Length: 111
Image 1 (cartoon, rainbow, N blue to C red):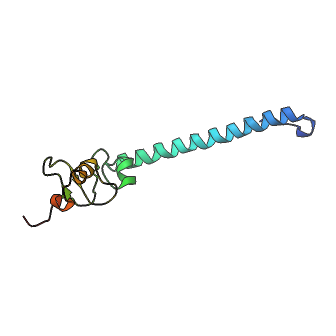
Image 2: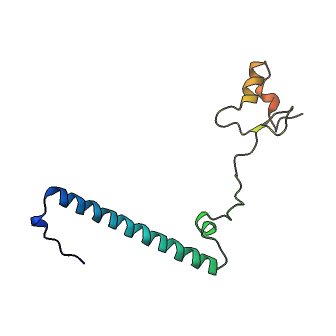
Image 3: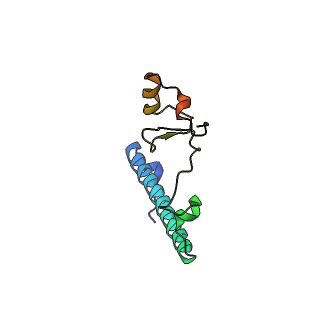
């Protein structure tokens, strides 16, 4: 390791040294992070898991969105549904503007 006499360095030299040291520290942390990640992935693989499976609690690639239950469904297009929460979907807005009562789309209403 090189010895530096900091007292003999001018400001520009000190700033260059500081920048080099900061970069070396950042590179060191990144290298250690990658090593830790590789070790964790290897340990997970040895037990038959991917790291994603262990950190998310679900199998990667097979995650399903478990939203709220459907409260309203478009009778003209059953693929369109809404839980009744959040912003109204456009098909609901359009129907209401055309004078249709929202309750007409309610899933659990008596037929």
